[in-house]
Amino acid sequence: MTRRRIGIIGGGVAGLTAAYVLSRSADVTVIESEPRLGGHAHTHRLTDPDGTDLRVDSGFIVHNRTTYPLLTRLFTELGVTVQESEMSLSVSCAGCGLGYAGQRGLRGLAAGLRGGGLRYARMLTEVLRFHRAARSLLARGAEAGAGAGSPAPAEPTLGEFLAAGGYSDYFIRHFALPFVAAVWSCPPQTALSYPARYLFAFLNQHGLLTVTGSPPWLTVRGSPSSSRRSGPEHGSPPSGGSRRRRPAARAPAARRLPRPW
Ligand SMILES: Cc1cc2nc3c(=O)[nH]c(=O)nc-3n(C[C@H](O)[C@H](O)[C@H](O)COP(=O)(O)OP(=O)(O)OC[C@H]3O[C@@H](n4cnc5c(N)ncnc54)[C@H](O)[C@@H]3O)c2cc1C
Image (cartoon, rainbow, N blue to C red; front, side, top):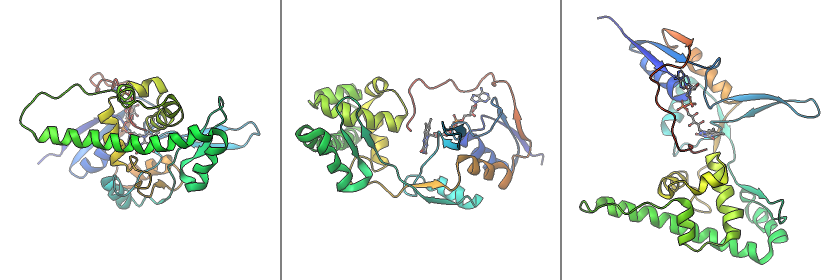
């Protein structure tokens, strides 16, 4: 029987993984419009003002074993080594002088009291309320989904959810917006127009709707470039190789909403 020939458009992590799996039973060619593979997973070489060479990852930075079982399996198969990492939120407000660090436990959080005082202490209680309300919105959706075909109510955006919950402007500016904009790599105004349920589902899945529930985070040892190197070359290479092409004509349309991270 002749082997199937498959063309994959896009050499990001999705395309490379598909190529890796499909190349067991087909001749695969990856078509990529950029001069490098990896898509979002990219390590930039920068020089800081002192002239020191820096390598800065701009995508696909952290993962964990709970939420990413297939990626974990892929890394094991390819022999990609990972190491413990950290994913946390630190905020520094040039306007009011507030500064706090989520991952440094009570010490990092208490640091906020210096710049924020009582308003900051109140904000911490709002964080707990926000987590509870977000989880309850998700739970209500699950119940409605289980019910008999009644029309789904209009879904709020994050901005509408915050307004309906009466959250303080201080909480929105010093927690909600930095948090969502950082996770989603998007400007604050874009964060406000994001559908709340979709956002909360992502946060919940990653253990980010509780103060202590976040799973241990991991990162690829070296950089995203090293996991990319471990891809086609290290595992079964796409048998047709990878080719640089002008954008394929019928590639999927760009998504209108920004993606997580
Ligand atoms: C700043 C930032 C930080 C992130 N941090 C994390 C993180 O910590 N953990 C995590 O899990 N995820 C993170 N992500 C998300 C993760 O990087 C992406 O979800 C993932 O890399 C997407 O892979 P992909 O293959 O689907 O798409 P992409 O990486 O976008 O790859 C698509 C590829 O297709 C090519 N292409 C597109 N159209 C055409 C065409 N018409 N013809 C030919 N080629 C085409 C593009 O050039 C690109 O190389 C982050 C993303 C960003 C932007």
